[in-house]
Image 1 (cartoon, rainbow, N blue to C red):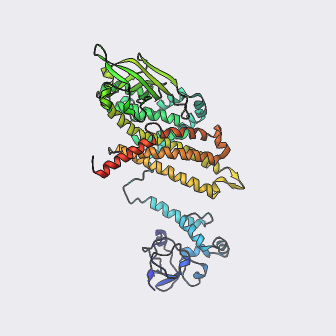
Image 2: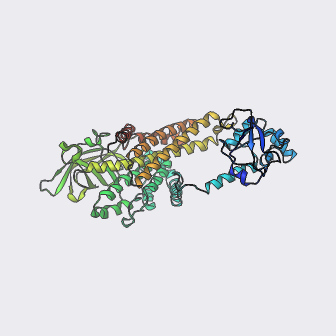
Image 3: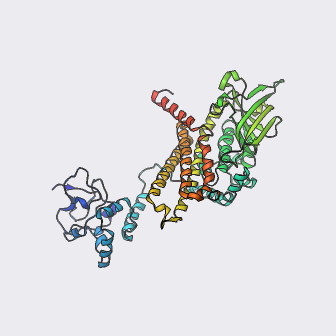
Amino acid sequence: MRSAALHLPKRFVRSGFSAAPVGKALAVPRACLVAPPLGKTREWVSVAQSPENRWQPGTGAFSAVVCTPDMRSRGCVPALFSRLFATSPEKEAKAGKKKDDLKSYARQLWTGDNPNSDDDLDSEFSSEESETTNAPRSSLRPLTLLDTDTATLRQAVRRFAEEEIRSKVEAMDDEGAIEAEVIEGLFKQGYLGMEIEEKYGGSAMSFFNSLVVIEELARVDPSVAALVDIHNTLINRALTLYGTEEQKEKFLPQLASNMLGSFCLSESESGSDAFALKATARRSENGDAWVLNGAKQWISTAREAGLFLVFASYDLDQGYRGITAFLVEAGTAGLEVGPALEKLGIKASSTCEVILNDVQVHDSCVLGEVGEGYKIAIRLLNEGRIGIAAQMLGLAKGAFETAMRYMHDRQQFGRKIADFQGVQFEYAKLATEIEAAALLTANAALLREAGQPFAKEAAMAKFKSSEVAQRVSSACIDFVGGNGFTKSFGLEKLFRDSKIGTIYEGTSNMQLQTIAKVLQREFSGSN
């Protein structure tokens, strides 16, 4: 009979366990194998052995073999597996009860899902896992494996969010405002100057790490995360990339310590079609200033902002080529912030109309070059979408963790809710979706940090994370049932907050359009 080599885990080979003295090959029934070898259809399969009668690693398609107790009497059971069946009469009886269904038990060994397994066997499996983990074979780093600094940062932000924000979430949502104490804490922790250089008073944090902060804040309150995200990815980043040294020295230290910023692009007639804006910028009569007129809609953090990044066109006939970015300080004559809009979600994050009525700003307030405001907006929004993805990812994780804790505590019909198979299937799928969103977000962030094109990946991350946040938060309310429908558990708030993810900084359809355009360029060979 031709031998079939079985690939056994390294622990079997290194452990020195030897089989009973037999011939050159062992005859093993297929029924006793976890899976039949590839290409083998005979009822019996032989297992090759070394001259020392030890299991020889080979090239088969599986990594474990289970033998029946009766085979032991024929000298066909390696010592390691004989421990499963006979080390003492007591264990023999115990093992017999556990292994009535041999194939089922084999599958449990295969998947590692065997709550009744012997401790010594569990230690064999776990020891190999730890050895494998400690012996990397590639210089590539898993996207979800954080370095020490990032892991420490995550823990610090989570602690801050739990201790300083959690107890205030419901009240801030009801009042429609983020408490001043929370904002002061964000400045103190350095979360509102994350990518600002240290010489300007910032934290000089990497973009990836700034997303960790946003994600952890969103686990507890997406409203706070939205404020931090917009301030860092749109305002601070704009000055870092396009500001003159004079502008940086004037504004960045304030933005890192005590002043919030607001991004003013959208208008009532230019939402997704953002560059169809009607706000104008004309030269003053004496030619030493710009005069801004128009109205901006749905402007986040407008009520608290000390600095507004306003986009207006010096020539509407030029279309997007006339758009210019201006830095306008709060309190400038003619700048008016309307009342906060009442919203479905992220209520604590103020959203207002910003009215420009003959607002005069000096030439030194132009950010970047005249007529290049659209380029600034596109770059900032591409990066900002990764921030939104992190927001929605954190929201999904927060809802999921709340529901999972509840389901592992709550019992119905004498069982934990988490133990029902139908429920298990659902939360397993949600966990997979969350992981996919996390990987997309991390990849987009790392591409940005590496200086590689990332517009497509950023759109993918925002699209996926926003959709996942809605599905997860909705399903988690179902998991928790009547309690999930009440305010006390916080899930209904996360569900309401999740809706904004598919809308702001580009709707889901706009993300899909961006993805499609990049794919078209890639496959057409054009740049």
